[in-house]
Length: 529
Image (tube, rainbow, N blue to C red; front, top):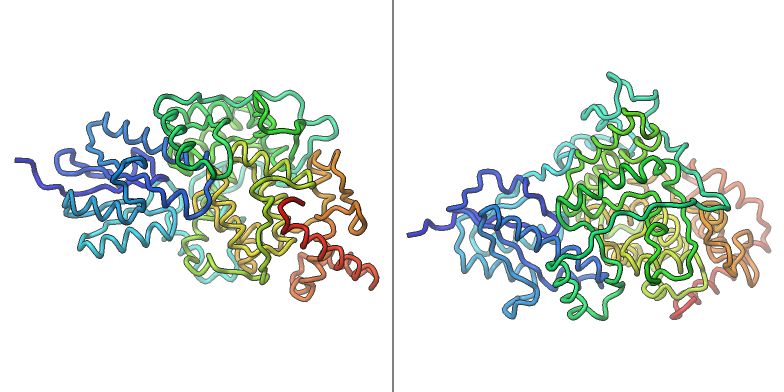
């Protein structure tokens, strides 16, 4: 007679780590794994087709690997006729059928999912054991200790603590090179000639499991945004390690210098073959593998530091990349769990405008937004400056309700998990948290985009003009943002220079800017702008 089920190990779509703490003490004779694909996770925001596909195919590959290891996996597919459609309903049904004594999981990646599972466990009278997620280098309790008593939670000081703790890029107790970061060396643009020849990132042609998922997503979610045509993400730990090696060898040497640069030569992202090198430039494409736990961040950090130690990449490139993972990634997770659930509803600038319809279609005369949204629809990807200083900046200047911006980012990017996406959007991009994360709003005129990209070439708008028929909407809205929030910004010493420039404007200039800004805001709510 089989032994009763002891532990039901819950594995969510962003927990695809075979070495997870959830499996500590796993007994194949008494324990089993539970996973479920549910429509709710694709529809609570209007999710990009590629994002749906990356989670489903990652989960199915994880399931198959776990079964090959001899683990029993109870798995509900999206297309099962009995699928109840929500995580809570599926888990409750599994508890009733399998009658486990206890539920075990590692920490969830979002507040909503964690609370739903807790409610099911309580209602079903089952103990839920939530174990620390060893994937991260800073446990949540450690971040809480770091935050205790601090008036400000700046990433730079947290990053220094992490460098010391993990001995990363250190010479004894001092940072290699005598400085903690080399951000000043990592802001180059490509110049008029562009980035020059670039190798395409390694590709991962869909295997039968992935092809099955792509067909399912195309059939089940045809009206969702984005495209599946360019889907070639790593979906297994093995593929993730190949992607890491490809980045280390091909693009890390230039990552640091050009990490903020933007460039596009093509008018369409849906050409055949697509301009993959232009989409990714010198960026790693590793965030999706990291956020689904297909790749351990320690392996990534060690590989980047080894390249510097071997003299194959500059300190600026290695440090700039490592800072994104050891610093920023761990920091935003700490911010998320330290301040949730109140953080989700913050709106420090009182922004109330709806998200413009062109954020879904890319149909706008503004070439920068057309290019970035087009790339996002084609790949489910844009790098951090495209997100912060193009789509994010425009929403901030326009005064879009920050929760609407958050929902768009969560929907559109394949690497979006709420713990990382929400603080980046509300805190860094929209300044909705009033300065918990960022020391000032990251605002700029169209001239920043002209300097850091070729987007302005061929655009009908002039980034140097703030009023007039050909004035750049970014520039108009930038000056209007300063006018609208002048009283608040005057209390921020980091905004002094920008406000001094504002003070030089005449009364007539101010009136003209405000009138043109109202026209831009009105046009943004039409189907195309």
